[in-house]
Length: 341
Image 1 (spheres, rainbow, N blue to C red):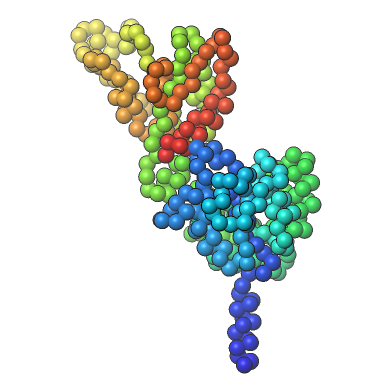
Image 2: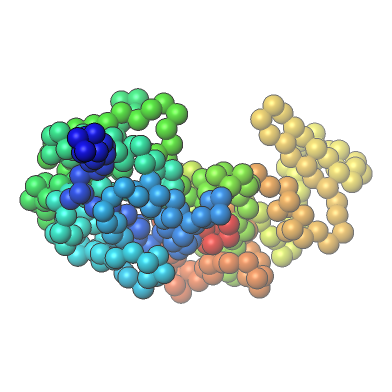
């Protein structure tokens, strides 16, 4: 009998604290994924949330933090709707600490499909010892998720939230925390946050998005493109541009050697260096599809023109209508890119 009690005590010591609940952050609009809910993305035959629930299986309850409930009912988890919308994960954590009855929440993002049960156990053991926020750390960098957040930190978090200071790590530093080091080969902190990362996870090559900037002559197409290209590039996209000219055009610069070759009768010329190449070729009725194939490594291919095409597009209407800002159009293109994968 004594031996049985000892075994039960040892088992109890290995289990997470019974007042810690899992708290799965579903994310907001998932705009970078083109509106696809990352929670339901699949890997090796199981949606992300099922894989995360496996990592949280020792916890007594798991809640799903959502912006709006309807898209997530199929997950079969109790839903906690944000009381503080559009305030990022800090608002979601504050909501959970206010509404969930448990003493603390072990929070993880919905795009972390490699959450490991052993790491959950290490986090909960650290929380048992000190009763403070516990987050993960690797190579000197701290990660707020997965992490444990007790109700005691709610006043500090709410103060930051209501002041408009929504950065999660700044709130954690204000409240104080302890860290658990991730093993070098651990994947528990990996986020699958973009279509490129998801394609890489699946071993696929992302498909380029073709997007047209169209409109009549002098409607602002080139002006918008020159602002849009650096905006997309700053977001990590590799961008190519194809210009459709409804009339013929001079295919080379007068005075250059390649121009002289062309005027001498060559049907095609090519110039290349260690960094770039340029090909000029006479062709009977070429179309944009031939050029799209040439930019297979691009993330986004912008076409100037082709207003009657079936590509997703923005129609410029300047001066009758003010041009959309490059940032707003880039947001729309990112959503279209996510849907394209």
